[in-house]
Length: 260
Image: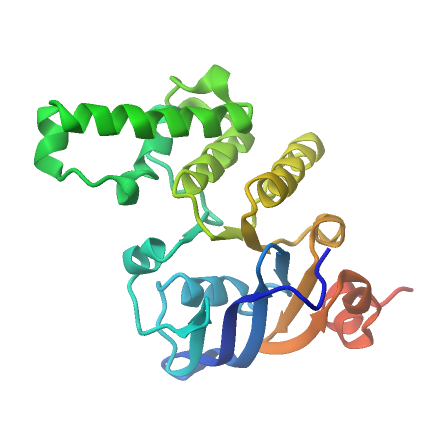
């Protein structure tokens, strides 16, 4: 679990994001500590996915700062953010449906490859050596996530839960310092949620990957997260351990529901 000695990996400072006259995020600040699982929760429309989009460079806030590994981050596009060591999965699965599992996971290695596109097209000498090295790493990730039996299966023919796991594998192929998961359990049955929860914990503990996730299943959040950020109508409502957040009356009223 998180303790006071943990290094702060990312600081989100006074972020304000608006679309025209609509304010999606209003002066939100929190940090993500190295090695933790940090959950971001809140009702629909609270600004959770917008915050993830700010962190990975898809949205550019009008105000506020993002600090990563002790340095203030300039305005960046998603591919530039990815190069700094931040990967993400999406609420709506974003895979290449006609490609196999291994081919999809290999796309996550593109930023790690030094040979240019022409070398890759020629598939000659150094390009082949590089591809073999990166493919080996992808195969290791596939084994880790227990999807070796579908490695040559087109992902479009896979059930939803397995597609989610392939998307996780592709993100892990980037070897990120910070992994952003946007509703990784959405649409899953109980067994699939248990499997995904186990893999998230394993990624955190065995790879040492820091994780920030959005999730609606409060049972999952309370089991997995070291700390929880609660957003409501784009504002920070609470920030603390799962127990602290669960006991916060403002959170109960706004999101968890008042017991009858």
